[in-house]
Image (cartoon, rainbow, N blue to C red; front, side, top):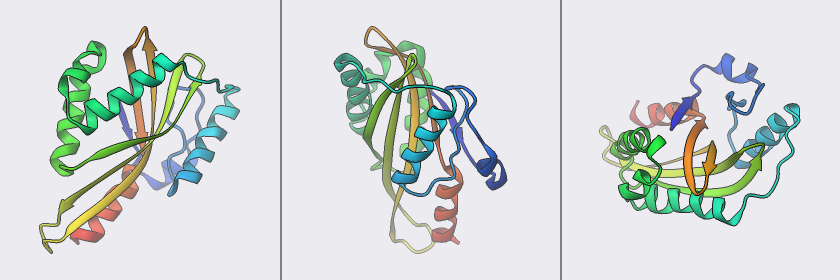
Length: 171
């Protein structure tokens, strides 16, 4: 999984998608704004969304529900072209947020890729206050799926917003 984290406010506000593989504008604070940004990026690219197949939907939902939410590494390994990177990302994010859960909000097919709009939620204990801190972030992953196997995935989310919230809590 190739992850794109947006950190620079100026870069965020000026980003526009030129192809489905480029990062869309990520300076969004709510799911509604995120959905609007995704739709706008697709429209400027001339991409007409279509419905994902039942097999693609099952693949994506199983990937997140079993692979990420239940931490079943064998599910990640079923997608060998992305398994190693996905496993590294899973470890990295669950070290920070041990109870991390990802909810798939919507799926759309755009050209040859499945666009997955998701919300990740997790908590951790603040080192300073000892309080449990809940964090939520919205994201988009563009996946290429061939015969039930995810062969590429690129995730985008607003890392700047996440860092700001974490800094407020710990600072």
